[in-house]
Image 1 (cartoon, rainbow, N blue to C red):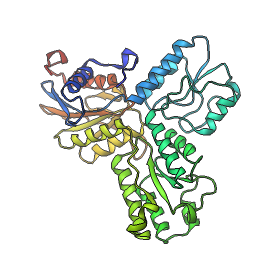
Image 2: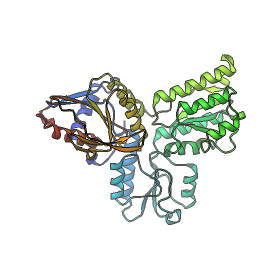
Image 3: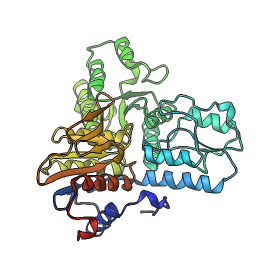
Image 4: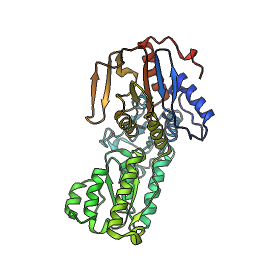
Length: 403
């Protein structure tokens, strides 16, 4: 796999050693078991896969290339490069300006963006409509286009489904930049509809089974269907794709559910004419991170920590997997750890920060699971580990550890 040129300060001494050892032992990534490091009175169980993926490293490399190659030009990002506060802060510090926020609200007016300016397209990609605005202004949209190739793969799959007269069902969060981009591209060639989860998908199932009217369905999916969407016509032949950072098991559950709906309505003989049995379109990093997180569930631990941006979809799904079994803290970085007894953690359900006054257990030995999403730099994990080692006054440091 390509080696990217990313800033050295994103790397870390602890995680670098762990990843180098695992890569040597398991180059084909077939072993999803974690790595345990005992520092004397605290053990960290480190997930097999986490941290910057191919798409993120590609985006960071191109962003810094844009900065270095254009010292005298205004440099814009359409929105956040990735959903990680450390990386986005670094880019802002370099003078890069964001044109929109993550909700699509305008931060800089289009009239203030000119043909000689540099515009970076983030890893999530962008909509057909936004790309046309840039092209109409004469802005180069290719040199610093950091759209993840796995996102483009979803767009290509949607185009193929559309060319075969399928309606595209997108499993994703309709306000997420990637899903908005995928929806924008898919509706160019096919009727498209976004479902967030199985609960929403079951509304489709009710319509397919004749239990609700087309009016009821359109009301339920207001703002989540393409123009002139006609359920009576467009839910006769369907295929499923997804936002690349969703839960793999949930996408499969949605696809299986819709397949069974079509099977019940049309029978086995005609199933292929009504349902495209597509392969899952999650990116490799999402699959690897989720598989490695599932392997963590076999461990015994006092607590789990997930590090990453609070608006990161792939990171929040790791929290979902862990929180049913472990007391799980979701933090953006080490600054959320205020002391041995206090931590500020993000609640993915209530969407707010919660202060916990009981954090590290008072016992002779504490075992902590730790992982992060695909947009989190390794140094953030390293800093969390180092801070906890300091709070616990661990008798061993990394220099004492023989991996």
